[in-house]
Length: 405
Image 1 (cartoon, rainbow, N blue to C red):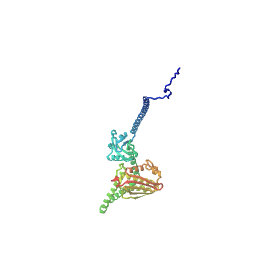
Image 2: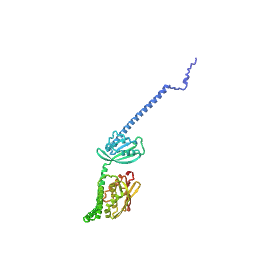
Image 3: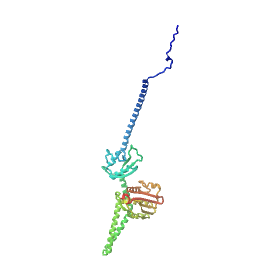
Image 4: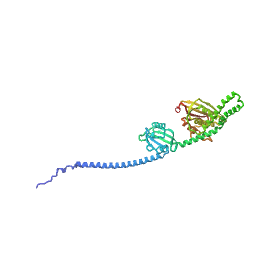
């Protein structure tokens, strides 16, 4: 009997191995790619949704921002360096009367004069804050006084305007300032009334004397000749003094002109003789023949204010010295007293409206004077030592300055 054995196939004794086909591998790769794409699409959709929400919020914020700009009482213009208008608010129309729709360039703002536009165009090219110009324009609602302020950031952002122009209405402030100036002048006129009467009395007495003697000495040719030369001069003197005080008392604009500062100081000093003598105060002057380019009435008002302050600072009497000095294209008018002086805190607050150390003071004399000198292109300064006195420095453009050319 034969032993019949089953021989196992040779491959069953070998290690079992799996050899996937290429199509199977490709299917797996494609599946992975599809899953990745689906995840990317989902992420893209989520990101797009968030972006849309951000854009919606940004648009809402932008609308609120422009609404906020439109309710501001200050006109705002955002400009490129060439003068193109990139941003504007509704107050620009309210203040200037110009229709802002279609307003593309600063040169289109015909409410400004050519020289004012040239100033604006020049300023928007120069980095720096708060370059200011006051203008008067005529609108359908009347005359307006506007303060134009130019601000150019030092660090420029290409997505933002390179310059900003702010327009503020100062019509009410100017009217109030004019009213306060007039009130201040009337108060000073009342205080100077004794000096004014005294100055008028002198030429009137001289005229009266000559007229009385003329009746008795008409046959004296030398006396008649003398009277005919003196009387017209005394009458002219009266007219000049009366006109001077009338011009000072009435409200008027600060008209600039060339005039002799020495003569103006001497005229004001005459009216103060009675006031100063009653307070045991001696007035000394050291004046040069100096021509200045400013407002006669403006400088007269400031000088009167400063002299009254000096008198009030010396209740026991003292000395007031007025002098002039040429410094470059400026003239310094100095008023020095040896009165009570001021502390540093008082000095720093001098130009604040309504600030006063006097019992019955209005606190407006110095602020009004400071505004007048500022509008005339000068400066008002003070130096003081407590217990030693005060020096007022009034800086006025001379005729050689740019303003007077």
